[in-house]
Image 1: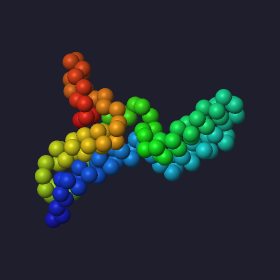
Image 2: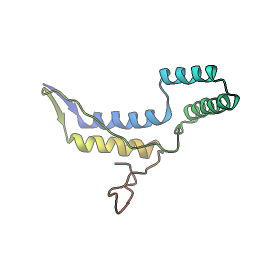
Image 3: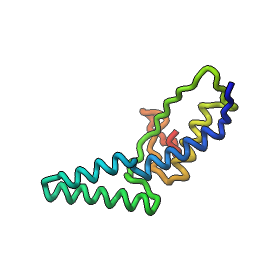
Image 4: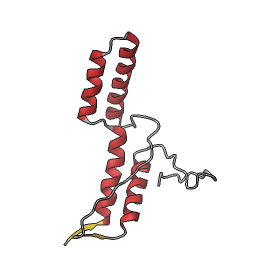
Length: 123
């Protein structure tokens, strides 16, 4: 049996939330660069160039790529021979909480869709 500490899950989720909102993967950067090259419209090229500039600035200054940092959706796939030392749900929520707070990401999730009370930590 393999044991995973819940704190390791929290740390990984925190890092993933921050990374997903500050950096673009190499394949996406490549696709954007290719779009800039193949775009025929001058205005289209200008807009795509601005997106490239935005990505560079976000990466260099460690700010989110976009103001709307979305909502974290976490899927867990775990085998029967894996044991989490601690509460996995709390570990996931704490990782998201830390990622959105420490990464200075926009916190826009509400607890109840009718009351519209913001959770202030995106969990």
